[in-house]
Image (tube, rainbow, N blue to C red):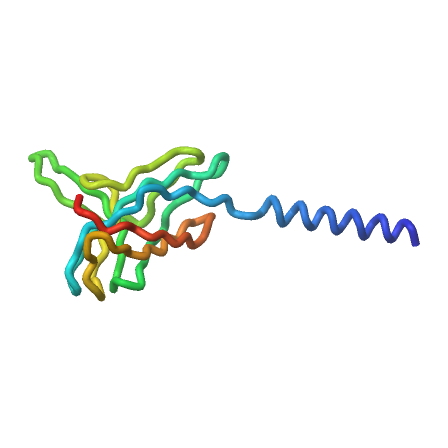
Length: 144
C-alpha cells in the first residue's frame, strides 16, 4: 500500500511539473497606439512587442471588435523609391527581442471602423500569437 502511495505522489508531482512547463510564455506589449479614424474608414495601429525570454513566437493575426478587419502589414520601398505596403501572413518575434510596429515599418491596418476613433479614446486589439495565444491590448488613440 505504501508503494502505491509513493507512486501516486510521484505521478501527481510529475503532472504538476508538466503543466507548469507547458504553459505559454507571454510576450510583452508596450506603447500601443492608433491614429484617429472616422466611422467606416481605416486607420493604423502600432506597438512594441518583446518576445518572452527563451521562447520565440510569432504574431499570426489581429482583430478588433471596432473594425471589420485587421491585417498585419509591412511598409516597402521599391528600387525607384516608390513607397507602398503589403500584407504579411505573420511576424516572427525572436525570444527576448523587441520588434517595433511603427509608421514606415511593420504595422496593423485596421479597416472598416465601426465607430469613430477620437483622440483620447482607445481601440481594443485582439492579437493572436502562435505560442502565447490571444493577447488583448488597449491602444490609445492619438495623433502620430
